[in-house]
Amino acid sequence: MKTTEGIYLCSAGESFDLIALQVYGHEKYAAELLCANPSLCRIPVFSGGERLTLPSVELPEETGYERYAPARAPWKE
Image 1 (cartoon, helix red, strand yellow):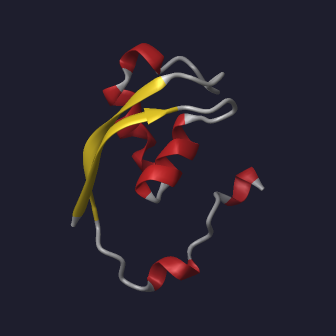
Image 2: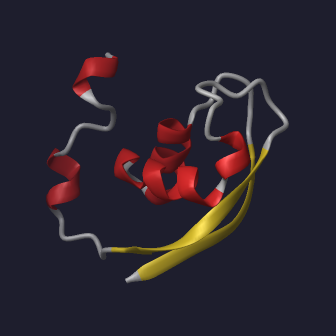
């Protein structure tokens, strides 16, 4: 397993789920981002310049099945 942690500088139009997808590879990690950034959790879409703390998250190794998963959630298309 690999972990990711640090600081992320938000761009305008980004949201917690989009950042989780970009940083961790899956939107399910948005909850960890929200918990690590309680002062920003009421912002649905960032205006740009916000700094998020990226918590350390154990990411599973790729199994080869990831290529069959959609890159975006179907309801967002």
